[in-house]
Image (cartoon, rainbow, N blue to C red; front, side, top):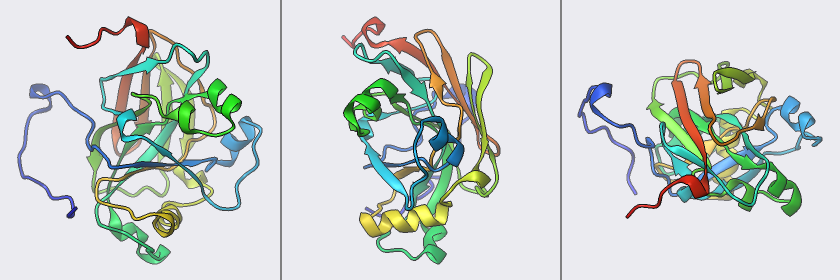
Length: 230
C-alpha cells in the first residue's frame, strides 16, 4: 500500500454527504492515557501504553448513526483525538514518529461499559458496528500538543479535556505501536479519552469537538429501531 495522496478535487460541503474520512485496515486505540480518566474508572495509570484494536467495521462517519446493542445497558461516549498514518512505519524511533502521520481527526471510542467490566477486556465492548465514529475530515496542518477535546450530549458538555494532559504523547504512542505491529497508510490511532465519560441513550445527539479540527456529530439509536437495507 502506497502513501496517501491528494486527488486535487474540491467540492462544496453543501453539495456532499461526508463519509468517514478514511476506511482503515485497523484502528489502534489507547486505554487510560489521561490520569483523571483512569482514576474515574478506578484504574491505575499504566507504565507503558495500553493498546487494543477496534475492527474496521466499527468505523462510521459524521452524521451516521451509533447503534446501541440490545444486550448492553451502559453504552458510553469517549471523546478522543485520532491520527491517521500516512507512511508505512515499522520500528520507528520516537524522534521520527511524527513524520509518518498524515493528519488528525475527531473520534468517539464508543464503549459498552458493562460488557467491558464483565469480560475483563475490550474487544466486545468496543467492537460493535458503529462504535468508532471518526471525522468530519482529516486536518493535515495541525499541532496536537495542547488542544481542547470535548464531548457534548444533546448540546451539554460532558467531557472537557486537553491533549497536554496525555500520559504518553503522540510521538511516544506511534513509536511504541510501530514496534508492536507494522503501521500502514490509512491506519487510525485513537489517543485516549479525558475524564467525564458517561452514558448515551437512544435519541441522543453526541458531538465530539476538537479545537482546530471541527465537530463530529452522531445520532444514537437502538439497533432494533433501524431498518435494514432492502
